Amino acid sequence: MPVIESARKIKLLENFQLITEKIAAACLKGGRNVSEVDFLAVTKYADTDDVKYLVESGKLRTAGESRVQDAAKKWVEGELSEARPLVRLHFIGRLQSNKAADAVELFDWIDSVDSLKLAVQINRHAGLKGKKMPVLIQLKLTASDTQGGIDPAQAPGLLEEIRKLPFLAPSGYMAIAPADKDPETLKPLFREVKRIFDRDFPGEVNAYGFKNYLSLGMSGDFEEAVQEGSNLPRIGRLLFA
Image (tube, rainbow, N blue to C red; front, side):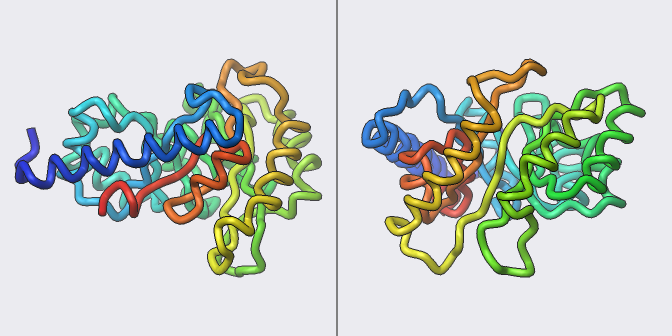
């Protein structure tokens, strides 16, 4: 077991419980079944002892990292290597084409595909490894140059091309909401993204055998996102506070 103080263990479990209760309440408000929602823990800035404790406690089962090299140092070479088989690891950052091979090697899912060029690179490396790689297409909901993503209007075209790539399994959409908006005012935007998701990814499970995910919502707005249809909120700050 990792060496962390009992008070810290209690705090982590309380944080986890609070988040799960908030997700359940949001599902109730939205008329949704809470079993539809998976909780992705963003571990990129978290203390590795905290992460290891939550994994070994049976709480943390899905995690997200946004830097390939940093993730490898933790999950392959470092303190989380023993916990790696217990966790489904998602890449949630902006992926450069020259890192595609490493991302395919390390991650179970890549959630930030926003161009055909990147998709082709991921497909090539997945093929070399004999791996069917589930991916999410990232939609761009802000004007920020630092965030990746494709215009939602162009997403169906990209999805059509990705479906032609034999080693990729397109399985939903991911998006980051504008950070300067009040969470309550984001509901119409979340609702529109959910409409696009339902149109392009009907059904709970796709033809590749993977669950279809709409990954919306982070620590500041996940309740509103879940209420409007997100089934893979990404939460880090609130969990590891």
